[in-house]
Each structure stands twice: as C-alpha cells, then as structure tokens.
Length: 170
Image (cartoon, rainbow, N blue to C red; front, side, top):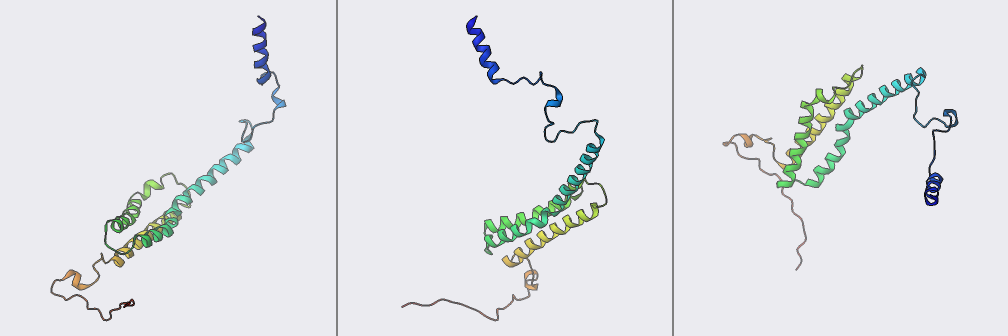
C-alpha cells in the first residue's frame, strides 16, 4: 500500500489539473475567438476575404514570377540541338499552354470585381512564357523562318560574313 502511495505522489508532482481552476484564471489562448462576440467574427470574415484575394493574386502572378527562372533555364540549356535543350523547350511551351487551357478551373474559387484583372494578368504571364519558348526555338534554328525552309526550289540563305578566331601556336 505504501508503494502505491509513493507512485501517486510522483504522478501528482508532474501533472497539472486544469479542472479545479475557474475559467477566469486562465487567459484565452492566441487565436481564440468566442462565438458570442460578433465584432471579432466580422473582423475574421473580412480577414478571410483579404486572404482569399491575396491568394488569388498569387495565382495570377505565378506565371510572371516564372519568367526569370525560364530565362535562366534557356541560357543553361544552350543552343545546340540535343535531347536536353529540346526537352527544356518542350516544357517551356507545354506548361503555359496547359495553364491557358485550365484558366477557368484555376480561377473557379474567385468571386468579386477583381476576377477579370487577375485572369488577364495570368493570361499575359503565360503568353510571355510561350513567347520566350518560341524565341528559344528560333535561336536553336527549329522554327522555319526563311522561304528556303518551306520551298525546295529556293536556295538557302548565303552567309555574307564568316568569322573565326583563335591563335595558332607553333
């Protein structure tokens, strides 16, 4: 019996009993909003609306924020025609096109007067990414931009200048 009493004392030493205290002794935890206080709930609803607008603008600005990274990827891929640059250019074209086709589902949750502006910014950002990918295709020589690319009887462009460099060591 004595050993049982000692084990209870050890448990009581580290345990805290919150049922014996009155509710007024403890402060409300951070973020706690009682249901009967209507002023705080109105502020919460307004805050939720502001957070929704912020989130929607983040979705709308995401393609524009991808432009610098896409430029770095284009630079790092190089202008040679091999599997890595072709895959990079393919992803640079396919991702914005998919995003444009899913425009309405991306903005399904948006309501209010800012919808048109957000959709327009999202559309422009994806168009900029597509233009960057087409520029990369042009610099790699993948886009047919001369008449000799289309017609077999037209001679290809002749180079007016040739440049070479280097020093010959003997």
